[in-house]
Length: 257
Ligand code: DC
Image 1: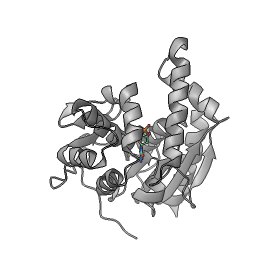
Image 2: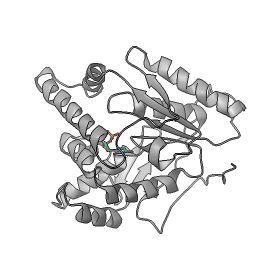
Image 3: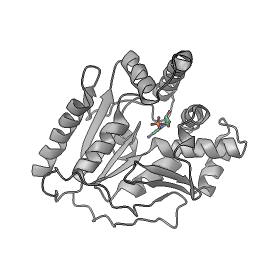
Image 4: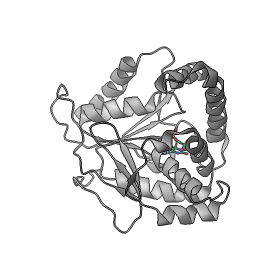
């Protein structure tokens, strides 16, 4: 199936969630000749499995845009906190989402998330928002809204989208689906190292991660599960470079078909 070419700037003014790609995606200079096909690559998996780093590095290699769908749930959770809306109130959360402008902006220093024009990239990583994102994401109507926006963003291809339901729900026909997993203890350790967590709070962070994991995997709507046709990579005993190499090989095969 041929897809329309992506525009450099995509602004869906009819939607409140925008993807602005004003910065051209970074291309790793060592990458091979520019591929002709613009793939949709889905990378799903639990927290701490290394999705974000792999998705970002892969997107750079291919000259694609890296879209972190979790940042959208995080932005909505932040808005709910700011507006004192309960994470359990589906109707109010949907209204908040419809009234918000959530932008994912790929940039050289890493992806930025803008909420109504404000850069919330750092704030959405904090503990209260992290928990809130997992809680707002259980609501079917919130998910429907998010999925629609995410489809709009990635439909043109040339995208590495990471999340929990990209291969199962957002892009069930994605060209490449990777489900990245790792042993829970290893994921917890990686998360600690990534966030430079001090020993005193390490136990809390591990407990949060386990709870969030359980919620993401057991929710009724679009639980975290590998798509039937996803390539499952267990990164427990693999380095970041080894995982990237495997995913790159898979993408390269598709691009030479
Ligand atoms: O990937 P992340 O940790 O930033 O995601 C935050 C939360 O958002 C996560 O707990 C589950 C939810 N999420 C989701 O339900 N579906 C996605 N595609 C991405 C994230």
